[in-house]
Length: 114
Image 1 (cartoon, rainbow, N blue to C red):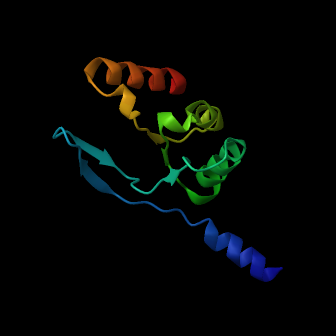
Image 2: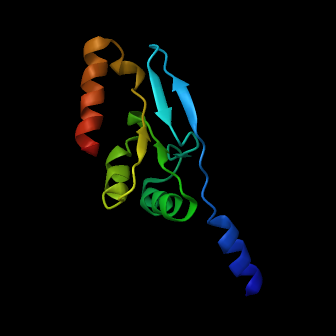
């Protein structure tokens, strides 16, 4: 029993990484969290639970997804009651490349999360 308590306590340590990221367009982005949880290979039925645990118990603040994974709505529901700042990283599917299509795809993701 004592062993389990120690293991659980050590698992709750928060991870924080401070860094500056240069995006491919030359725009500099400041972030404290470069380590995140990717949910692309998770089954849709487990995303809500896993994202909640990652945010609550492990201090993750970055969630990586992709439009092709078709799970952005699930993630949006999982984070709707979170008070802390969260960063969502997503990718546009290759069929949506090009200025107009990419802009459309980005706006669709924004609608889901905001």
